[in-house]
Amino acid sequence: MTYATADETLPIPRYWIGAGLVLAILLSVVPILAHPNLPLIDLPNHIARHYIAANPETALSVYYDYELAANGNSTGDLLWLVAGRHFFDPYTFSSILLALYAANLVLATMVLGRVFQDRWTAWPLVAILVVFNAPFFWGFQNFLLAVPLALYALAGWIWYENARPWVRALVFMPVAFAIYQLHVLGFLGLLAGIFGREVHRLIQAGSDWPLHFKTHLVSATPFLPPIGLALAGALAAEPNIYGNMTHYGTLQSRFDMLVSPVATASADAPAVLGWTGAFIILALGAAFLTLRKSSGPRLVLAPKAVGPICALAILCLAMPTILDGVGFVHIRFPVVLVAVLVAATSWRGVSSAQSVAIALVFISLAVWRSASVENYAEQHSDDIAELATVLSEVPPGARLLPVRMTPLSPGRTDWHIQAHAVPISEAFVPTLFRGAHGLKVNPDWWHLTMAQGMSMPAQFILGDAAIPSERLNGYWPDGISSFTHLLALDPLPPELTQDADLKLLSTNGRFSVYAIGGQP
Picture 1 (cartoon, one colour):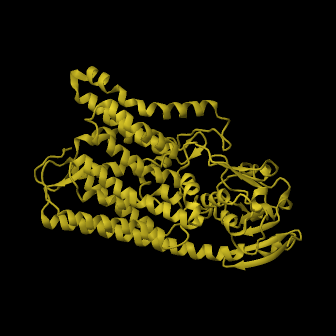
Picture 2 (cartoon, rainbow, N blue to C red):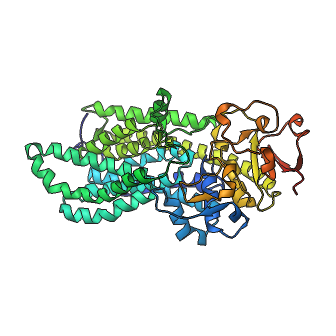
Picture 3 (cartoon, helix red, strand yellow):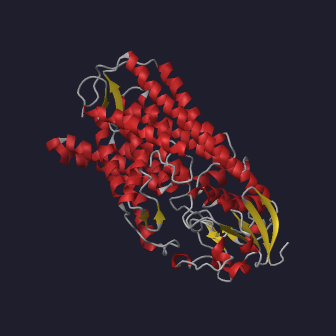
């Protein structure tokens, strides 16, 4: 592996770098802002929570309470309650937040590249290729917003590493605490990058490492309060309502981790997104393999980045699939690692023609990826428009039971689609997230809730199919009589509805809504 030097560099005019930055930001935000609904798995639940938080006096108050708490997972909620609810509806606000994430991921990678390379370069713009990653398609809103802020903070930490240690400690005291409150995993990514850099500096100090350690120990103080809060919270907290299981995962989960910077998270996503992800992996892989070369067209690594890259790589490998009941933790940090890696590398030994060829390859991939996501969002928005028409027949305060005819493990995009009934119909939905984000279910309705990953198959609820044992902890203790309305996410066959006390109210596309037991 070769490291960055000042020679063999093909200068690129700043106005070309600026034009590339504008193009990259446009390609990242247009697919997000072009359509009202995004095909992100968890996003409907976040939108529903924001609606409840901003509308405490609606029919939903019978079922839900909302109380903002500083819990290391509150980026979107803070922004919504402080400013967003005064200017936007929750749908528009969520799109704006995700557009800010996308633009900031590209910009933060550029800023980090400026710090690593001591100059502005165009290569970090390839961060556009990992904007639409598995955490994005999962809809991990708060984590996504925190990631670029952590990259900015890492850039600031390295930029000011020659400042007096106590000055840097004072500057970063509020920064570290703020990022921890926005999202604890974003803080963990920042902590890993900074720890890696400081360990590398100790190694570079050689025999003088004890003096270096003593001199710079005060620099660690900004991170002690958040770490202390996290440990105290873990020790004093009540059992996680989703279970306290921690599970490292299978070999398949490690593969999912490796491809997560370009994965879609759901098997029902368009195949073209899988193809774009595969070509991005090939292109980036081919580029990073040139780090082994010592001459000719190749990437070189900035020495300052060695520690952060090693620490983040270890963090990626160490992360379990489920951490204290929180799922899909293992797919969150690889995108951070890729962003740091592209920021830390730059091209050497590249002719003008080769530079143009490299640019065309990655621009083409970025345009293809962006167009594919935009088309996916368009299809999903059309789907939600049909759902909204059906939900308009559901009265405020209704208790809505979602069912589907698909198998137990369908594509994940529609896992939480029923949450749209909260802002559209002000209806109770049993599958909303609760507890971890300030949303609480009133005690009288706790028995009807379960933040599980999908609605129940209709043949279990309306038919005589045996309910698998892993589904016995569902939300139908008294059968469908606990609910006032039923939402079918797929057409129901007549044999399931003819003997049930259901009245069809509306059908549009694949969606139908029924009144249960004579309800209006």
